[in-house]
Length: 269
Image (cartoon, rainbow, N blue to C red):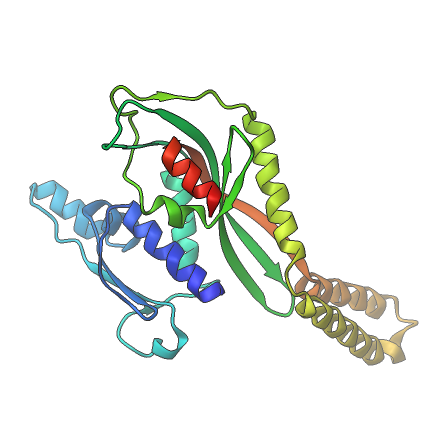
């Protein structure tokens, strides 16, 4: 699940930044970068400085990313939760802005009401003996409170614009922004309660065993104040390293005004 989730997140991220996939099959996707994205993530500052100085058109690179472990030896960049490239993408999201407002461009029925949806994309982090991240995308209909999962995937099918289309109008939300945000966080927390936490027990067991091993090592020097202080420091370091922890971090979000027809279809799913 996590690998599929990561692949979808990466694809949606680059498409949202106007980088169309040239190839996208079986856990490997290749994008043609725009000038802006090449400058943002490909670490070629001197090249772009020179191009701008001479006033010539740049040649943005292609980027191949692999999320399928079985293809990690192929030509391309192996990307996974915890990899530097993924952390770079998360950082660019902060640079580009965390909040957006978009409107559905409903060409078939331009004179229509648009329903507000509050959307957040969040990273769930699981830390113990190992670390694992998972991305979730949630949408809250701000009139009746319906919540839809995998929301960015649904938005990918729509034509969106940052400017409200002519003759359309927006419906005033019945749910306040703060309340809606808290509902989505509560939903994410409920989702976390459905996860398998065998890994957490294993982390606690490993923490206990490491602690007992350290105490045995220092047992002969238990009356030595310096040795006891060193023991406490190492026990604290082990606990910080292996103590199981789960966190939710909102990466970005926004308000999306969608047509009544689209909103109805989303709620029915």
